Length: 208
Figure: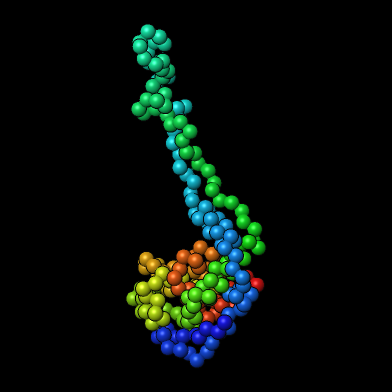
């Protein structure tokens, strides 16, 4: 698939880039995408949830009333889970939600996600550029020039650029990553995938 390369102004450069069929033109695998997205979201979870059990509650362990003759149910100490302020039964405990996914499955998922973007004509390629200083307005103008200002965008840089990353950091519907950071969730979550020209080759080398 050939895609035209545009300038920052949105004008055509007259050049086209042929996207590799090995990365952008495979038979998509929906199950691999599901597994990779599930793994990505699971890895984002802190897993620090915690509630106190009865042995962790501060309070007296003295029996609060006699065993029989009160007309009510027997009760132990005030830390009993049935009482207000008592410990919680089977409450959450810290845990690690992450799970391992084979590299071949992750690669297949990323290729499948990129293929879907290519099929939907949701990929734009912009020539290599740089900002002299972090400017959010300049970043917004760039997205407007390529017709993506009203869409959720993912901009993929060939390598980290602090000025560009900082320019898009405060915008709600945009994310800036490098080619080495590309992942299935971000690609699927974006309405428009914006690739900087040099990043295309890096993605090919990463996934081929």
